[in-house]
Image (cartoon, rainbow, N blue to C red; front, side, top):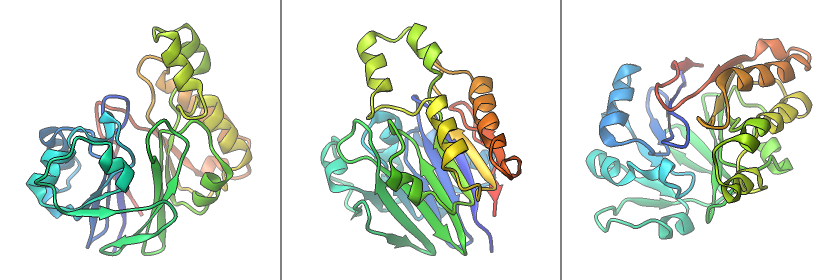
Length: 259
């Protein structure tokens, strides 16, 4: 038995993560088209037909762009917060809805899912941990800061997918209009490299064998800046070098991480 994790895509153009055991496969967010989702799954040796459900974090387009077509094609349930569902232009053919609520665990197959609230400019944004066979996976992106409750939820993760959206200097001189910059920088926007590094150096418990930096901005960040900032923070903690650091992007899936 094993647990497999792959970030199929991450960024402002689309987000999707695959978490699988021998019995259960979950798609976390559906920000890619059906064709692209299937192509990326095939590229990493996974089969769309095995998907047990899709779990949605929030209603922004880069997280739900492919939801309708994927759910109809695969005939799978959609695990989604009621307020998030109401914020989406819904297709009446989508009948298999599993309402989820922050703080209330639910199970799909042999994977236990814990949704928890995060600060982001959506109606009811959620992040998640997934547990199976003693392995815990955290998927935490699209949040303006890391409240204590989020830090507690991600303790004990064997793999953590965590936002490192922007470099502060690049954002300040970058092409975004000022009101968009203010949104990104707000407590309901996105985590900067610095904010992520502060968590890694001060609050990260070091349990994760794999840390994936996710949702990097293509305009206001650079992969090597994000990597170096995070690695320097990890190196400040005893045993931090034991955590393998990876970066996700929109263009290609990560490797499949096996636990």
